[in-house]
Image: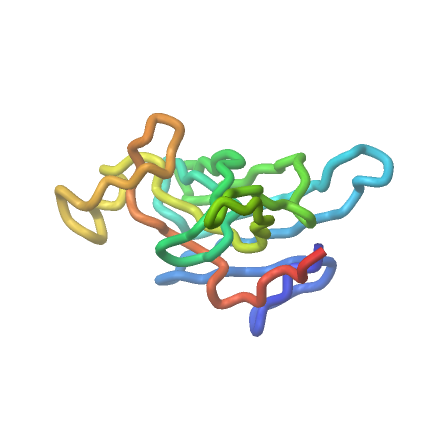
Amino acid sequence: MRCRCPRDSGHDGACRYRLAGCELHTQEEQDRGRTGFDVFRIRARHLPPNTSFTVFLLEQAGAPFGAAEYIGDINTNAHGNGHNTFRLIVQEAFSSTLVNGVRQRVDLNQIGSWFADPKDDDFCLGPNSPVTPFDGDNEAGVQAFNSANAEPLPAP
């Protein structure tokens, strides 16, 4: 996969997503020939400290999102920096679903990240902000980042 961003892009499949002074940097390395999976690295800077974020591969970066696959979490330290390395198939990620009784392939070529705890987004939305189902316990905050401003991955 070569993650292509309109601006703020690096080389070797690197992208940076910015939101209100925060930075989320993703990089994917294809190594499936030898190992059977891709290596997808996410580094985050300037995020809220000591906060967990869920990470999903998505059909559509923004609501209503379409098909989604929960791939893991990013946890920030006291300085608001975090990272994780995911070993999974990213370049050809897809979901199989029924549409009008016919099986359809849905490519998962976007990324979304949510506050893992609904209370963690209160600093920007106030108390009683919406609770979303984007965490393993079915209770997450709002979407913090997505790849909507990046070009989607090419279809396989």
